[in-house]
Image (tube, rainbow, N blue to C red):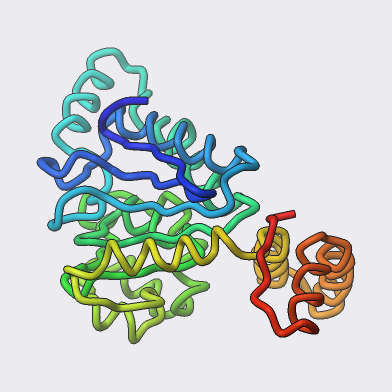
Length: 267
């Protein structure tokens, strides 16, 4: 895996770190490929019970597309007539978001600085966002005459509502960490110096929890957003049967009866 993305697994937690702080963790091709591969690896690894997505440096989580590389690729497209540059959405951004949202385990984003464009989309693809008080968010796309990608036209309206999402997409602006918390974009707001420790604490708590139950909760919420109440009740019945048959449920009930802390196995 390229040095632009670091990948580490420890005690059931996969930590994925965007590692281009000198470029505000912008997405060049090498970084997009590495992030896609890391996210897919973490999602597919049964030994990984939670994923922490974070970034190096203190200025930016990810500012989206590396525009310096992008402008050169667009010029090459014009010369060749290929139009291949924008295939990056299909080849990179979509698989990254699918891996994060579809992972059968919790995903935590530790947002250390600016999250713009695709970077905002990656943060929203996480299940839980721990945000530094110095961070900021920006949709950015319309500012460079592009439409939304990285799932943000699906995730953002579901987090803050369609009217506010449309406003932020049509009129990109910097959203402070405090405003992001008030809007519901940030789940937890912490001093910048405490971000990494707090995010890791959250992620490790999830990594030691009932993984199958967490996966079912993710599936249930995603299903309920696009289905009727009656259909969602049927889905909850299905998923509760699965969770109830897990070893972790037996462990939890026994620990409760014995007034002990459960030690989950993730199965």
